[in-house]
Amino acid sequence: MGDSVIADFTGRVVTPRMGGNKPVRCRVLLTHDRLVAVSSNEKVAIPADRIVHVSMNSISGKLERFFSNTITIKYRTKKGGRSLHIEKEGAMAEKFRLLLTNLLLRGTTVVLYHPARRSGRMLEPSPRRAKISAKRGKAVFSTKKGSLSIDLSSVVHLRYETEETFRTSYPSVEWTYRNGTRPTTTIVAAPDTRKLQLLGQYLQSDYRDTRGKAEKLALSTAEENALSAIQVGLEPDSIPNVLPEEAPSTADVIETLGEKGLVERGKGGFRTTILGEITLRAR
Image 1 (cartoon, rainbow, N blue to C red):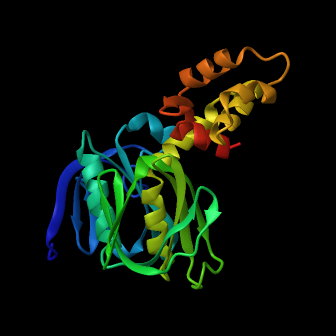
Image 2 (tube, rainbow, N blue to C red; image 1 turned 90 degrees about the vertical axis):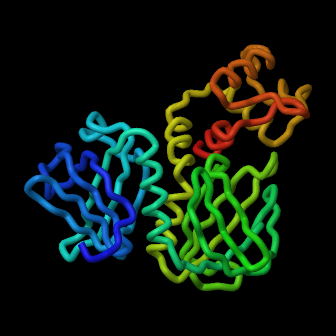
């Protein structure tokens, strides 16, 4: 292989070219230009500029039983979209995901609008050019005046936008996250839709899992009303006013929300957790 190799390991791979839906032991190599999986009798080489999706543990359906730590890679071919799933035990899977993400985003310049909103209030930030890098648990945007680091576990909402954003006609990705106790929204715009999608997938790393948990939670009307009241900062003495007449006591409702991981006690009283805020947004 003429390219310099930046990752070389053995793992289990699922792709239609190798055994269909069954994992095959392969040597996996990553260079600056391509990703290669080689089994005993087959080889798949994916040009880096064809990769459109990288995610961790997003596998589902029949394949889910085969894997635990899984990187899912989707890419374009002349015949349409293809996918490749790689499993590697321990921290190597996350390390490889970071390597691949940084490789795909290298040299990408985006237009950063930060903060675009704070506590729901629209702001008018000046656009700044920034370079992107992925670090363990964080996304970092480096500008001439410093860097902005986003903790992936703090993201509570994300969306793509194709309409004009502020003063640019570029497509954008917008995400809201906890900055201390205040929700803050940041927007990044770029002309390269593929790079923007790769960035969005990385920013969703923790959010995707937490939203999956939120969508499975069952809440009574009393629990949902109390959670909403805590989210908007309603005084504890006023919470009974938003509960149904037949509801348990406010203390019992809040205790149940705590057991479900939706609220926690802060310095000024109870507040919603990341899971609690995402649960409200998912409804």
